[in-house]
Length: 311
Image (cartoon, rainbow, N blue to C red; front, side, top):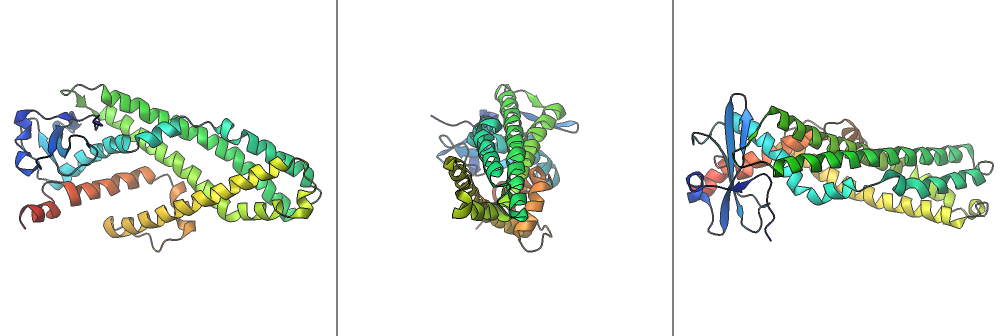
């Protein structure tokens, strides 16, 4: 069954003429609802496989009167709205998974376990070690809160995608709906960024000390419930694994941002990456990144596409 790219529908015969000569035999042409930019209504045409509509190849903007837009600045304004569509379609599974997350369920036993450990070790560990244990407890509390906020943000994404899905082909995406799309994307990215930044920071600064404490036999002997130790250590190991993956992704994205977006970010460090995750600009970076990719690799009038058409 074909996976639709919401809110695009199959183009009419009249609309198809714009991209007909540029599509492959195995592709179909799809059209967006009207998109209001200022006082003008635009639409987007895209080519993609019938049974793989996520795989964009060519894309172009045109007006209700059928005028194909070659102006790059107007195109970028319209493509900004396209990135909202892309985000909601490309990350559907992740968004649904986030919407089902439950902070209390995820951290209830961990909080109980670390409290149990602190109760038994308060008089036994060094002052710095006790501070690390208390910081780890605070990390659990903050993570529990952020997980719930991530879930709430994901539910907003699902809701606004439902609005898109209910649009008729002749509908108009006005400023009000564009604002809701932007808000949903930005909020989810920002909340996830804060959660990931906190996880990275904990993994680098606190978790190593926690593992040292909880693998020390003299300390373990004072904690009667060994499941408490096992649970906290297991979570620390998993967080370390996730952090390693996040750092790899972050380093790759950092290089792309410097080269393709020409952002003056300096050399990648984990500390700078954590700051970026916390700075609440991840939504803006996502928009800029994807507009750049669209303009360079998929726009009908990009230099890349012109070279392909005229080798």
